[in-house]
Length: 92
Image (cartoon, rainbow, N blue to C red; front, side, top):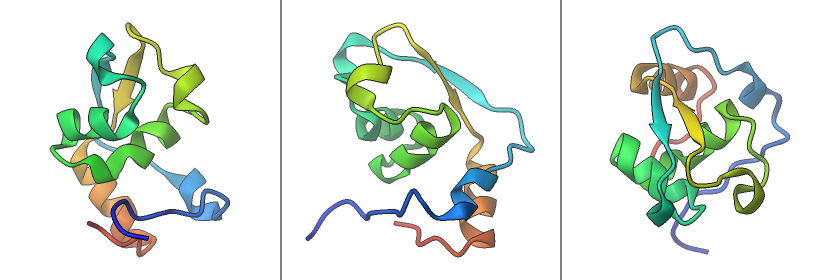
């Protein structure tokens, strides 16, 4: 399959995401369409970090858990980079 890389959410290291730097916050807009990849594109300038938003905000189903007006925690990009480096996750 092409396109978006897949991650195994059962992998234990995903639960070890630490935020050392201050996060930002993002209020979900109506045009986000319950699409974490589109929100990731807006806040990180890449759709590939959608999983960070899902993980940190404890969202298992974006169709149910992401409504317009919801405020999401957006971890600092440095924390995301350090997490990927520490657990050897592929960056796209």
